[in-house]
Length: 182
Image (cartoon, rainbow, N blue to C red; front, side, top):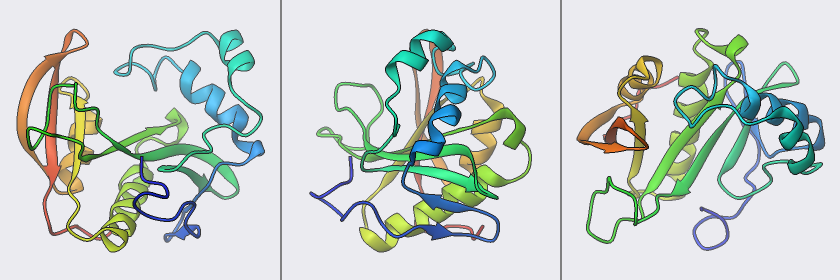
């Protein structure tokens, strides 16, 4: 979590060449349902959740919490990027006390392959580096998730270790100090 203890939340919207990264709004609810119900999106994230369950569980304004950015393209939600403290009980850490900030992301399938994830994640990492200079950011993904592995490399993450978790091999990396632009 990155809220009041570390940086004020929410920040002003972040604008890139094509995207707006902003706090969640009521109009994003259908997008959140789709992200969590999509078999494609959830392939490496524990599988899709039942749509009817999501319709009951997701609040009117979903995802309104520190560290979660909605990715907006032309007024529509196409995904999310998150920055959260990594649970110290999970495998994968840089130091024994862990607690590093972890980058996460989910994009709707129609947004795949257009560079939006690279653009959005790079913007969030740049914002975070300005907000908390020197704070390390980590990323964990299944090695089978080739798209996520390519994104990690584009963003400047380097491998720290691999381990088994959730019945699959996981890749754990840290962001190098120099970030590529957009």
